[in-house]
Image 1 (cartoon, rainbow, N blue to C red):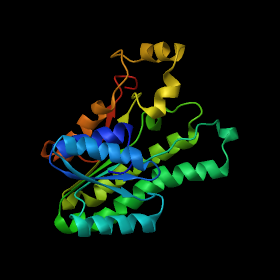
Image 2: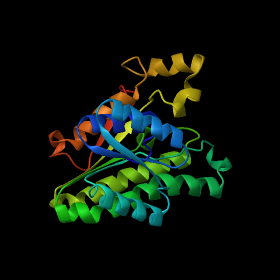
Image 3: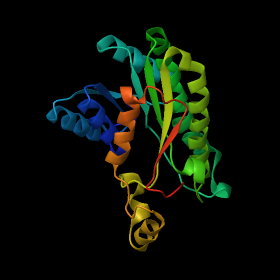
Image 4: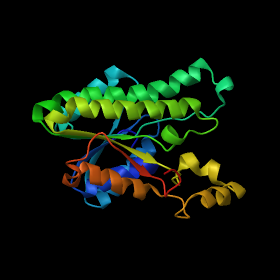
Length: 239
């Protein structure tokens, strides 16, 4: 579980642990938040451990996955949730910021997928669930590089699903809409909140647990015949 220390990632990690999975919670900077996630999992009777690495660093990803395989078992379920956003209009987006978002979001997802695939293919079973965004399909002003990175993950998901389906490996994407997390809190203050809610047919913001339930479904045997799909969790904001 990459990016599992806060928000949607934390909710997914807790849900998968409740299903019986041993969950490795990846983080990069916030060790305290990762520890809080582990404690919540343990209080619920689940099993988990934290592991620090940068998904944009292919060597670090390789070392981390090898460590997990030695310490516990090969990765059967990969949830790619680690991501960043740097909002700016296209004309104000620097090369440095573009590369940072692409390397973390798109390259990071690819790094993790490529690294776990060998064992999944050998074992002839695997689940890869890539977290994207409503912005990947709808677009959004000021999120050119973020939207492009997430749209790239959609292309990766669909192509990879065709490559590895014969080995019983399902690859899907989950596209959250406006979910109440630390990342979206600044967007949803004051009058902006009422404006946004007016555009959502279900009339409320999503919560991380809404997304976690869909990930859990795709990771379970109920999702055995679903691959190459994007599941939208947005309350009808984008249809």
